[in-house]
Length: 482
Image 1 (cartoon, rainbow, N blue to C red):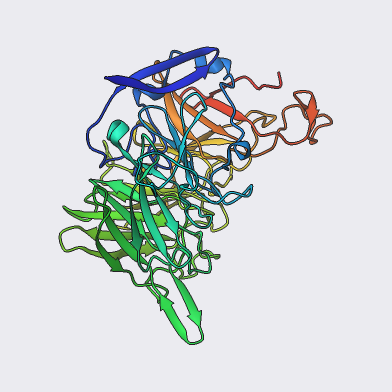
Image 2 (tube, rainbow, N blue to C red):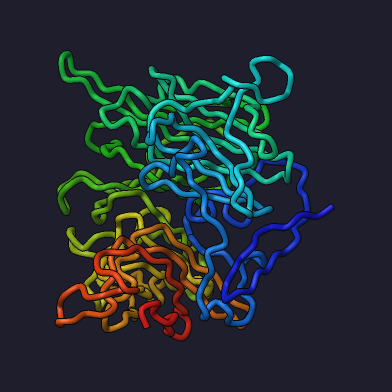
């Protein structure tokens, strides 16, 4: 039995591919089961269901459907969180606390119909009944994680009960809660920034979760961050470990957004978890980039290394596996320019930090595009002034602070605005790499007089857009204002 993966409606052409059903829900769903697509934060997929036929994408996209969320008792994602999808093209997200609704997990099918909202079977009749909605506490900034396993798979989310945190698994098919486990000491609710959470990592039948931390001053006491390893079959916490927190050399940031895993980064069974945040100043001794070693044999998590990095408003670390002339795996993060660079990279053991500036002198680091090119050597990032920037061969620049060569694409009138939305890198059947994302609410396509906003699609003012850019050939899709 097969079902359809994903439907694209581009240039008036719809295409769908069939995907096999899987048996075990212990790995990430393809092609985009977590924020930025995979456990490496690469925000790129050449999965067959994500491939554009020939170059029909250049003719623009049709709106296939819209969904009125408040009218359907739900809301958009939380700040800096992402919609993810599974092998059947079903969408999943954790709603924000807005429009009068409490956060919950929601799933929508490829045709724009609500499949389910997360629920718990209080009557033991395996049927959703009134009053059985399952809520996740306050708003937060992490995304849900979708496992494989076909219709028998699961969706994982974090929540809080007013005093501490928990992790919950839902059925992908029905939305019914399968299990819920307390994360004692996660500090998801008790922090002074309680919505600052990282999206868990699903790998090898385990969820890797980083808790938050907080400090009280009278009397002074630190409530430290913990790493939790949860079995996705049973929901049991297999082990947890406290990290050094707040003290010099310990965890000093409260990151939110995405966390990257590099399996066996520090040796067999010694995985690396990587994330970043901002200290508020450059080179101030309070580090911005962190790596945690998770030793699965000894069941001990330790802070492997930390480093000064760039200014960001979210965590997004991109894993670049060793390939070709690259001597070792690298991790990189696109950042604002405030701390001196716009792309920071390290070997996975923390060595060979590189700080790179691009020719456009444009920063990143809000929650915009950051993708690993399919060649494994380049990173594609979205600039604040509407640029799409390619950091060429950034993986092999390992001598001091030498930067990668770069090229950027930008129309003279900057019609697409700042690519501030989470985006991705895909391919067409000709092998071209295509960036697709949305913009901040801004449109400068017809500037008259010069330097003014001008008219766009018959209206004046700021307008958000969806855009597609061929970053292999540097060809932009035709501006919608033409």
